[in-house]
Length: 490
Image 1: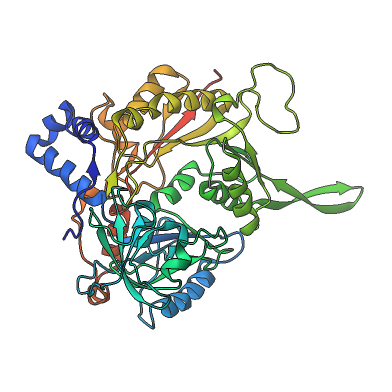
Image 2: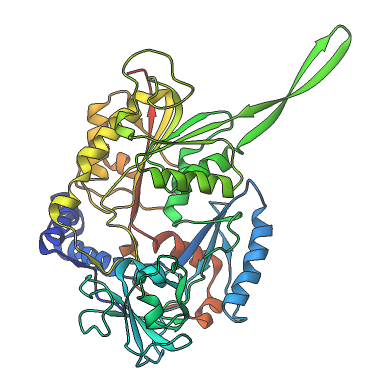
């Protein structure tokens, strides 16, 4: 049952999305009433968090079972002895699933209040504590140690430093302030730590602030699926074209086993000699924002991965137009340089959850399609014949997903759409002129296929593992994946 209203959008954006989800093909197949019901259900889901927290185990440094045991101990501490199950995903062996408990409806609101920004509020709903930069407003007499109610200013109307706020705000739960109001708003730049430690959140979700940082990477389920669909192999040269913050980059390197030793046997006279060589894969990660590239490098270092080379470079310019040899493996690159390419494209991000309000204009939402096509064109040129290109977004729009697939197949005859393994999401959405067979080869993660639901400890105890896995697969963020193979040289 919904606890928050549906995502708040500009009228022009909601109309645009509705036209996509109620296009002629969809309405013809489902009927107008059912198509509209699914669209409204989707908008409702977007304002709520997914049913599970998903973490990827860094199998390069530890086994899944070892990390699972460490995580069970951690959760018992965080939840004061409460026993919450951790499931290993049957199709994604390096992924662990932790059910989110909530919404909890009997939390008593306090007189003392703090208001946080929308982004901070979204993070709190997924298990984070409140850090000082996220606090927008606090009650006049708030002191360190006070129990306070935390609210999200979902429309960004609260003024920084306000002592009270009567605008649109959503209750997130209670916490204990680690600082006074005066300390929070005194402007000292070093105050970046936890400002409010959440003790009674509406949704009980584990915090991963500095929890097993070498072993775990917090990642939405579809984001982990993408790298398995790419299926990187040891010794390959792989490009992550828009890589920050490096979740998929580090996953690629881990699946390639970073560096795999192999043996070579040869005979010298009557003596058989076995020598050990190193088969080193290479993962090139590009992003055009320098501090994001530093984040990729930090994550690679933290996870003990050596095969990643990260560069601050604009992916639309990554193709070397002259035929002069590469400068020490740095961008731009010669045509047909890579075995596999991941294009996790910049997008409107309309599939992210929870998201209670989006203030973007229609112009902003629709600005991504041309950029995605520029990046895609570069990716096709950089891919070797026989190579694999995976395109993904964390958005729900037809224009950035199925329409891009239709455009790619029409523009690049050298590309063929491929079936995906594992196939966890649903098939693609009708409306872009793709055939039924082509739609089945796509993966669209659409949370509207399940109702918004409450989860409590008692219901978890009675739930079958198969049902919980099914729910985790369905009730995640909105996401899209397409896989292509390049059949011949361009």
